[in-house]
Structure formats: structure tokens, C-alpha cells
Length: 336
Ligand code: NAD
Image (cartoon, rainbow, N blue to C red):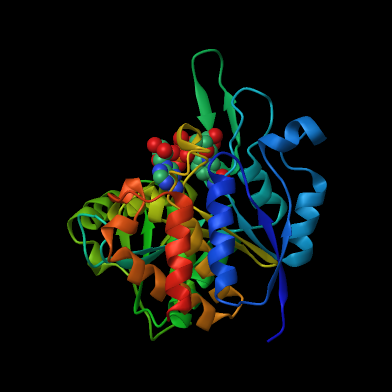
């Protein structure tokens, strides 16, 4: 099997701990990955004068795939968020969050299995805002047919690839008839090319209520940027919280896989962080690269370790540290 080079950004705070755990677990499967480790984030500011030096972007552009730890956004220091810059520089237009309940992870629900596909480049997050006089401000919501069709196509192709049955387009077109109306119309048009997949639409507020009442009725959700951001965190809450929620940012020419959580400075360096979200992001990355057997080893090993409460990290009700938890998963891989 041919090997690939993947850029690894350990990140800030708990990032170094959870990415080292993820690397250890993925390596244990024997997957032929060469890791190109590059620093980004706080450590770089002093050394390079920026949290995202050019050589980091070049590495991801060259390798086309990265596994990234969380990066702290310095508040009030005049740096743009590394995450936003990465997204824009690499054209990562789809934010993808698979939500699957894991047996033995404490959660209110037992049968969630859906994917949230969030448009990552426009909407109110395009950053077009201005003051109107002293006491008013305007933010402009940008929705284009091109970006809406692109994210719609991504959602339907993902549904087809994963054997999923339904795509729900989420919007507020009853109020924002032009912008959300265009999002809805563009994706309905894409749906016509996928007759085997059911296409429905939901108003975002109704969706939130339905997600809390009966999340199992949803399969793939496709949303504009702002609703996607909010609903994704609601989704993480459905499956047991930030410690277990993986994610990916996908573009035409590259992909960056990362946990949903941030750098959690309060618990950094204490061997307390749950590395599961990062390890699951790694499994998603293996599937993206076509290493499906290796990914399935990781998932099976995780399921077997989760059975024993003692082996889990604090946030999941156990006593194990980050390193011990990762070591148990490695041991379970050896035993498969
Ligand atoms: P956070 O996700 O870091 O922490 C929120 C809460 O969840 C904290 O109580 C934390 O201890 C806990 N937590 C998070 N991950 C955990 C894990 N793996 N195991 C156990 N507990 C975990 O969110 P925040 O505090 O809002 O942000 C901290 C920093 O991270 C900020 O600078 C923010 O900008 C940055 N951030 C980065 C990313 C990213 O790089 N993708 C995402 C979100 C936040």
C-alpha cells in the first residue's frame, strides 16, 4: 500500500497532548502515513511574528491533508483567527461534523447517527459589516448560487457515498426570502440529480426543536454558515459533548481534520484532556484517504475500550489520563 504524507499541526493548549495521542493510535494500525509536523499557534508568534507562518500553509497545500490540534485565538492582539485564515487560504468550503452516539459514552440519546454539512465561506460570516452612524451597525448576509450549489452537491455526494437516505436543507426562507430562499432553491436544484436520496427542508428553529426531541429522524443536514455553526454545537451536545465530537474542513484541493473543541487552557498539560474527538477526527481522515480498514480498526478498538468505565477520561466519568486512554486504545488495536 502506498504511503502518504500528512501535515500534523499539534496546536495549542491540550492540542499537543490530544494530537500526540491521535498520532500514536493511528500509527498503531500500521497505516502507511509519514507525518510532517509543523507548529502553528501561540508558540509561533514569538518565533515568526505570526500564529500561521507561510511554511505551514505551504505544507498543507503540498500534502493536501492535515490533522490539526486546536489553536488558541489570541484576544485583542491584532491577529486574525488561524482557523478562519486556514479556511479562506485553502478554500475549505465544507465543514463536516459526523455525529454518532458511542455506546457507553454518557449522553441523553442512544441512537444519533447523522452528518452536519455546514457552508464555510459566506453568509453573515463573510465579515462584511459596518457602523451606521454611532448607534447602529449592519452585517451583510451574503448567499450565492455558486457556493450554495457547491455545498449542496457535497452533501448529496456524501449521502450517496455513505449509503445515507435523506438530506435536510435547513434555512429561514420564510423570513429571508431572497438570501435563504436562494440557498434553498439552489440545493433543491442539486437534489434533482440524486433521485435516490430523499430531499426535505426545515426551518432552522423547528429543526432545533426536532433535534432535541427526536434526533434519530435526521440523516444529513446541510446548512448555511451561521445556522451550521450553532446547530453543530447543539449536535455535539447530543452525543456526549466536546470531548467526543470530531470534524473536518474540506475543500476542492485539500482537507483539514480537527476536533470540534478548542485548546482548553484550563486543563492543558495536566494529562486530563479526552483525546477521543481528535482520534475520531483521525479515523475520518483515514477514510478520506481510502484507508478504510485502518479506520475501522480504530473505531472497533474505541468501542471495546469504552465498555470499561475505569479506562475512560474524567469528562466521561473515568479516572484515566490522556496518555493512559490512548494506550488502552493502542492495546485494543493489537488485540483485534
Ligand atoms: P474549549 O473547547 O477549549 O473548552 C470548552 C470546555 O470544554 C472547557 O471546560 C474545556 O476544559 C472542555 N474541553 C474541551 N475539550 C476537551 C477535551 N478534549 N477533553 C476534556 N475537556 C475538554 O473552548 P473555549 O474555552 O471557548 O476556547 C479555548 C480556546 O480555544 C480559545 O482561544 C478559542 O479561540 C480556541 N478554539 C479553537 C478551536 C480550533 O482551533 N478549532 C475551536 C474552538 C475554540
